[in-house]
Length: 223
Image 1: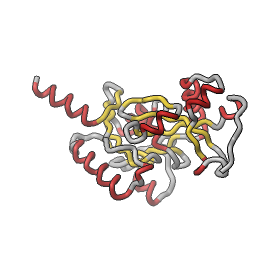
Image 2: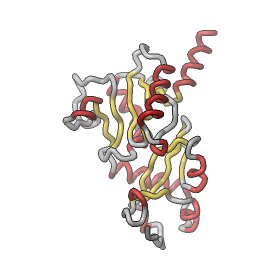
Image 3: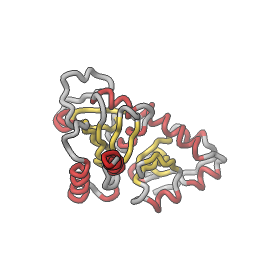
Image 4: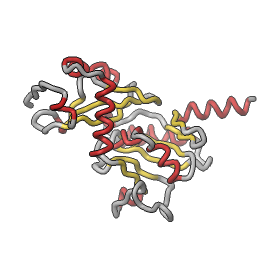
């Protein structure tokens, strides 16, 4: 693996992208990387798209020391990385059937009427590091419009998350058990997003950990 000499921010600006990482399981990585916490125990981490001979898998997190050496504040890097990701790695929302068997579809750009919406797959058009799409501007609201209300988010992997409309039929604890079982049996440790389930509440336009939602509902019942 060779090294890459960086003389100015402009040399790397267009290569910047964001990826979603679980803060608890990647604490050591985050100590060195440029990132921004986004709630629910997640962080958006800035990385560079690079040739495979320079970085394994063609990506490398941007170190804090590199940002400081270039005289760049971390917030600017996160903003530029987000803009690049939105432009170059467009969001994609499809039914589970389409994701598994085709044909390709994207409910963000197609008429979703008549589509089965029990389980939807959220990623980017490349299907690579697509879980970060959840934190693209206005994406959570757009999903709510498509599913017509509240929904759960199951972090399938760093590459995608699953969207399940909340019709009040499936307890969050059952979904949490599903996430844990799938992580243990099918997802590589380095590709996991942690054992948690998120919930988006349409009336409040708020994304939160489903366990916090359950506690809030219980307190309401007590009153």
